Length: 469
Ligand code: 5AD
Image 1 (cartoon, rainbow, N blue to C red):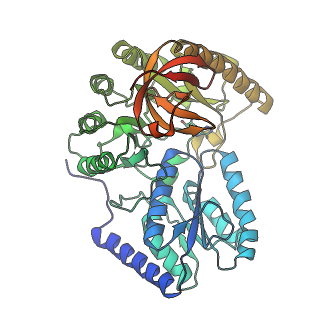
Image 2 (tube, rainbow, N blue to C red; image 1 turned 45 degrees about the vertical axis):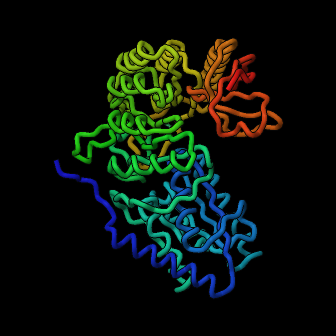
Image 3 (cartoon, rainbow, N blue to C red; image 1 turned 60 degrees about the vertical axis):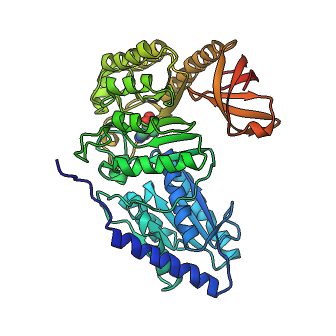
């Protein structure tokens, strides 16, 4: 099979680099070291995109700053997944009028998933006239050109035309953490869940070549990174567009074989495409964390169908149980939506019972938010807001009890953790299953794997004591 994945031609990428270098010397010639502030909303993919934005900006001569006040450039990287996030973006972009007034040279760019929605980017363009540039995720790689338009030609930059997207390999990256790295293995998605806006704004599934992903991971490990998280909207369909006969499980296995001390994670998986092979690979590779984020969204088969999820409760539980049969210690986490259009009390009870059956360590719970343009937004939704928030509260209650019970069960166990930072006067660390542990120890331990004995637990975290090195 031939590679169907569209890629940005090498020459086009070089051209952007040339523009970036030009902008850098332009700033230098004016005797200014400009600073940029990048604000990120939403998921890890967006965080990873912001790391690329910072990388490109650095190449354009920018330093980084941690707030909009006095920044020469503000980039707001937006999230479209729920109404609430979108409203916050409009509010915060609106407030930038004032920082721009105080620093008239300030340029403002808005990008990310919201800008992939034509009505939203049009509203941003027409009503927020202090915004200088708007680009959707497909045009991130052209950031030097957008900046050139604004800084040198004194025009506005808009790049929001609909596109299926293409892969831009080798963009510079400024990573925000020197222990943990995100590695995008693919972009976009082909699953059209009826509630979800993401496939409309991020385009079709495009996988990076395995050798490019592996080279990036090898380089990260060589530079001392201890945790790598492979990112994709649906990592389980990695490689389908490449036609190389390499699937996600194969890719994970190859990365897990790289020499060095590190832990390998991934997100997110769609249960429709999660394979036994992936669990087999996890079980047989020590460096792959025994944690699986497997969003189920609803425990009701009727609702799963209306969501266009292509699996049922039985298939989902079969996967969960298969994983546990191989790895009894595996930690499951998940996403769930409450109040999908037409969800009845009975459907909701099915969701509660699924949670009780799986017993997740942690759950991300969302109230359904209609996204214009998605099929679910047109479905009748008679359930009141009050009823939805009652269901939401009930889910939280159930999950909090389970999380606490699960966390209690860790007490007395000795677990290998990666020490990743400080919280007050204690160190913070993550277990293989991704649980947060706080314990006393010297700062010099940050960045190391060590064993801690769990002495106490709360709903959200564990308390430990250092065992031995
Ligand atoms: N409303 C509420 N939650 C949503 N999610 C995605 N779209 C919506 C929506 N329209 C949730 C899903 C997904 C998570 C990232 O966000 O649970 O897994």
